[in-house]
Amino acid sequence: MYRFGLIGYPVRQSFSPWIHEEFFKRTNQSGMYTLHELNPETTSFKDELDILKKELHGFNVTLPYKQVIIPYLDELDPAAQSIGAVNTVVEQNGQWKGYNTDGMGYIKSLKNDYPHLFSNRPLKTLIIGAGGAARGIYDALINNGFTYIDIANRTLEHGEQVAKLGGNNCSTNVFALTSLQDTIETYDLIIQTTSVGMVPNKDVIFPLRKVKEGCVVSDIVYQPIKTLFLQQAKASGACIHFGHKMLLYQAERAFHLWTNKEVVLTNMEHDLKELLEGR
Ligand code: ATR
Image (cartoon, rainbow, N blue to C red; front, side, top):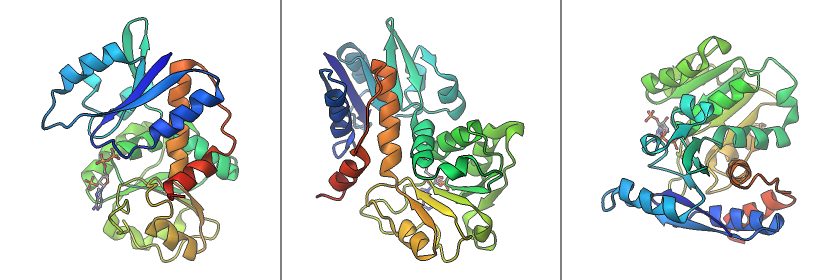
C-alpha cells in the first residue's frame, strides 16, 4: 500500500488528500495521502523530515518549505534545480529526489482549455508576481516555446531574478506593478501568480479595466474559484482560466512520478471546482 503526504504550514485545509485518494481509486491501487502540518516555530524541520522519510514513499512540499527542503534531498531534477523550489519528493532506491511539477501542471491545464495559445505564435505573455510559482510557470512556458514573457512585480529586483532563468531563450522586460497600466492592453496571455485575492483577502493585484481582444487571463489562486481579478478580466471581455486546474494537474504529475500510473481525469476538474465552492 502506498503512503504519500503533504508537508507544509498551514496545510489543514488542503484539497490534495481528496485529489490523491481519487487518483488511487481511479488507478485501482490502495494507498493513503496524509497531511503533515509542521509549524516552523515549534518543530524541527530536520527531525520531522527524518520521521516522514521512514513513514512515506513520497510526499509533496508546500509553503514555507519549497526551498528549505533542498539541502535535505539527495538529488534534484534539472527543472527543480533551475527553479530553485521543490513541490514533489520521490524515493528512488533509498535516495530522495526533488521535482517541481507546478509549471508542468500549469501548462497542461492551460493547454487543455486554450490549445490555440500553443500553436499561434508569437504571443506576448505577462506574468504578475515573482515568487516560487512564477518561477515554475516562467520556466515551463519557455520550455514550451514561449519567447516573449514580461514580468510585473511589486519588487523589481525579485522580477529581475526570475528573468535570469530565461537566459537567451526568451525576451523579458521587468516592470513595477505601478507602470503596468500603459502596456496591459498589449498582452495575449496574463498570468496572476501571487496569493493576492486568496480568501479571506478580497484584493486584486492590479485593476484590470481593459485587455486586448481575445486575451486569456489566468489566476493561480483557487479559493475563491472566481477571484476578483478573474471577475474583472471577464468583465473586460477576456477569456478566463481558473487556478484549481493547476492544482489538479501538478498533483497528477506528482502521482505519476510516485506510481508510474496515468490517471484518467474525467470530471475531476468539475468535481474539484464544486468541492472548492462548498457544494
Ligand atoms: P510563492 O512561492 O507561492 O509564489 P512567494 O514566494 O511568497 O509565494 O511569492 C509571492 C509573490 O507575490 C511575490 O512576487 C510577491 O511580491 P514581492 O516580490 O514584491 O514580495 C507577491 N506579493 C505577495 N503579496 C503581495 C501584495 N500584497 N502586493 C503585491 N505583491 C504581492
